[in-house]
Length: 191
Image (cartoon, rainbow, N blue to C red; front, side, top):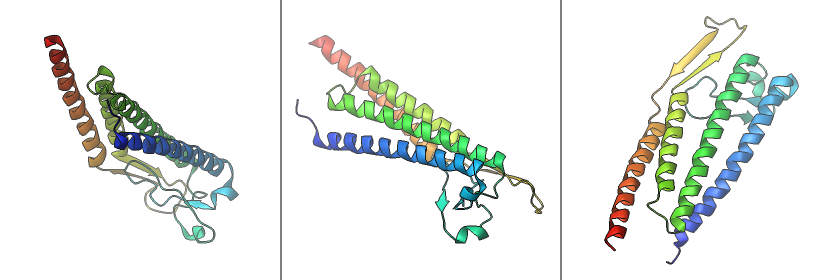
């Protein structure tokens, strides 16, 4: 059977993004831990979307304009920094797990094993990871610490449509592949 070049290209691109995402995870973790332990280092960064719901966090490096930022990493309380680090780490790990399952799935399809149990399990696992991302990205909180504002603690809630649609799509594909496996087994039993 002739190999599909577009699937091979997709597999290579997925491997590249897996490595890139892993590198971002390492860099983000180092910056956040340095930001927690070294106040001078933390002054170079701000987190514009701290406390916002969603799957991810932005960490901006700035030279001089960070001093005016309410979300400058050095003024964010340590408890909130740890929350941001843990939450973002969970997102990174789940994203890497999804990419790993997608790579396994592409590899089996490239090898001509389309409607096999491994692919059904891969889609089911990706759906579970998508639901976990949806659950975690639906809410966020922000502890402001000792500031002179009216509220020291804020939280936000959102409906994460993209992760939910991803999970639903993966679950539907798992069922489609399960039907394909049953049809494949029926065809093999006739031969």
